[in-house]
Length: 55
Image (cartoon, rainbow, N blue to C red; front, side, top):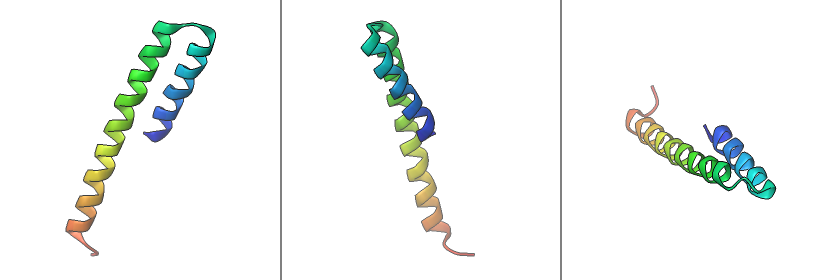
């Protein structure tokens, strides 16, 4: 998931450099959403791993 966030960030930076403000804003919003979802998924996974312990 972090790979997707980085890809959207790169697309946003390139679009902004070329003057495509709408595309850059949309890609940046998508990058932020994917990054937050990835962080939440990581946190849930880490907590579940701690709760379960070693089998």
